[in-house]
Length: 563
Image (cartoon, rainbow, N blue to C red; front, side, top):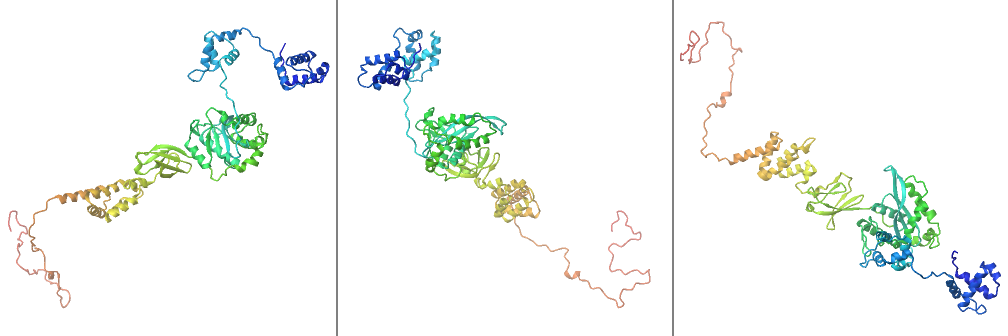
């Protein structure tokens, strides 16, 4: 016959009717207990000293009768399973709770080890024996309810897995997660849907949550997310640098829950399952944006309007009436999440940050610096001091401030012909004129090295000599630095030769110099004009003087004949 549990109130009801003098038939009709049962209840009460004609029975008497009615296990020898386990009692206790305070084995592992020793008992029998004789399960602690938080004091944050949603970016279904933010006082919550659990997802979800609530709580309790907590510690956790900066930006205190202790954030822990079962499962989703829109509507119309099982109030109503006004206002702009990195300044005066280059002054070449970059600016720190700020560049681009270069290398790095021309004019007028001609044209950068070489010649030969050489080169249109250098080398060699011996300068008389009046001619004028010609053709003109070499009759001088 099966055992039926008898309640204390049922026994008390029967005894009270017996005390009032009701018949057993009447008691049977009202309570459903047989006459035999009524007589048994009465007999046990009498054994405990109760008199039906005396005082009315109370709960203490009914509880004592109920305890007597429960069956008591018969004392005897242990069963076969317990007999086998008794021989290994100390070993089982050592496996479950080692003396060196190491973590004990699971009971299922203990069962496997016992089988290897030839002890094959059911798991239920092993569990009963371990609880009764080995102290198994005694480490459970009593729990207490924490005091309720004030409005606007605490928000609890946790990640939970939702399921698969279509992602148009990769054209396949991906697992999406829910970042759930629950206000502890009102239990009002916000749901942010994302495809990963990175720091950017956490910051974006929190920013959307504060805008949804219209304010920021004073303290945020979050799980030990790798994106936000660098080192999990019960007493002194280390937070991620960017997340700690975000907490200062919004003005809340970070409170990391103890690792592997879900009771540290109980108000959001159970809500993860509630969100998955009530909101996500059984629905058809197009993409992530569709899920996010419906999640916001669900938080207001479903989760916010339900009667909470603990507070027995509607979370949205409590939030509007008590908690909204207690939140810190959103005074700062939306947080621009930065990224931090440690980089080395290379000899070319640049550091690489997220596949882009940024210049640093010469004095920091070779040092390791900290680089902070957001969507707009990149800041470079040396020993905590910001030494350079650049505009954020795309991947593969660079930002160079030519003032960071040494003064003598900046013009060449800038590929600035005008700077070289200005330097040439400062060294000499003709040097500047030479450089103007040298660097003229559509592609002056091809002659930059020649221009630098010309400016360096002044260190070797002096500015005066270089200026004179440039004057000669400009005059002959020799616009080549190598020709200027040859002019300087030739002048230098001539200056190194010994001077000729000194003597008296003697002026010799000019041999072929005529007198000035020899170039003045006054023609004779005849009375009738032109001089008349003689009619006699045989007339021989008069000789003006003796002939040095008169012609011979033959007209030709013989060979070998002297005049």
